[in-house]
Every structure is written in C-alpha cells, then in structure tokens.
Amino acid sequence: MTRRGRSWIVAAVVVAAWLAIARPWTIRPIAAVPSGPFDARQYVARMWDARALPALRSNAVPFDTFRGTRTNRATPVTLHGVILDVDTTSRVGIASIASAPGGSPDARMLIGPVLRGTALRDSLDFIRFSDFTNQIDFASVADALNDRVLATVLRQIPAASLKGRQVRLLGVAWRESGAPDALPTVIPVELSIGDRP
Image (cartoon, rainbow, N blue to C red; front, side, top):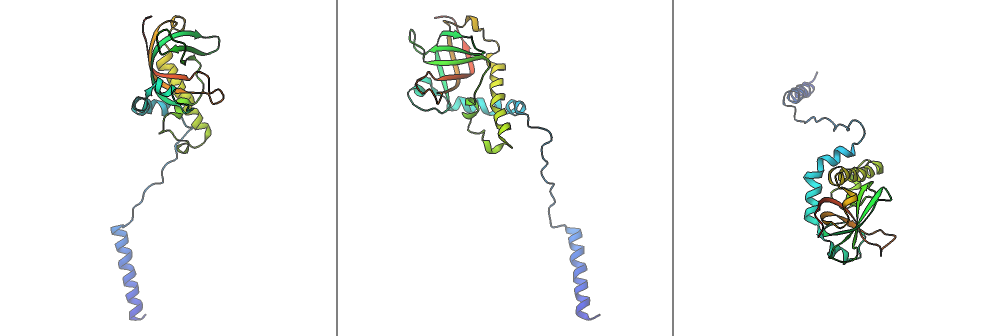
C-alpha cells in the first residue's frame, strides 16, 4: 500500500472516530400524528376562556354601530334592551329585542334549545380553515361552539318568562345573506337577564 493510500485510511478512521464521539448532528423524532379523531369539544373547551371570550370582548362594538352598517359579516356586539316577544314554536327559539324602551324589535336573539349556523366560529379570526385537516373538522368546531353556548349561557334561561325583561349581552350579530332587510340575528356568549322595566 502506498504512503498516500495509508494517509487516506488514517484520515478516514480519524473522521469516523470524530463523528462517533462528537456527533455533530441533531436527531429529532418526526412529529407524531395525533392519535384518534379530532375532538372539537376538547378544542373549544381549551380555548373558550383563554382565547374566544377575550377576543369577543375586545372586538365587540355597540349593537347600534353594527346595525348602522350593511355588513353580513359575523361581528361581536354588545346589546342592552328589552325582550318584546319569545317564539319557541321551533326548536330554534328566538327572542325579539328592542334596544330602545318602547321601540320596535331591533334584533333576534337565539335562545335554543337548538343553535344553528357558523357565525360564532366565523367571528373568531384565530380559527382558520387552513388549521384543520378537513372541512368536517372545521364544521365540527362551529357545532361545538354553539353547544358551548347552549351549555354555559342558555341552559338556565327561562324562555317562558323572558317577555318584557331587560337583557344585557355580549354576542355575535349577523344578517342573513338571503334576507338583508331582516332583523339581525344575535347569538349570546355572555347574557344577563334583569327584571321588567
């Protein structure tokens, strides 16, 4: 073996020994794929108090400001008023609210026991479709948010005795795209029911 060949072998051994001892690379495990199906209820439970309510509070505008626009976008609002009428003929119960004493209805507040729609999810800018695996998971978040409102806000609301009572709420308002002249609909996320004026 030539002197040059031996030099290459020695150099290769030194480099191999150095790599074995120094290990100048980083080994990281591949991120684990979440096991099991996506759980929208757990997702909502984790972010409701920490992110959703603070975001809704900080972005809320007075209902009269929303009413003065022509947007169909789901918008966080605050609303004070009086419940003029309650309609529970459908399971999607509605309470009509006047924001001015003695006035006509300005808003339709959803009271359950069924809540439909995606307005609450759509009003939260940090919930993006691109963050979810598929459309089904994204849709399930809207349902879980509505279920959270039913369980924490509307569960104890006595629909039969709401008429004529004062209401203060933080919620999300929107207009139906197919009925731009209809009253805005509101889903409450914080709700206080007072006495009759």
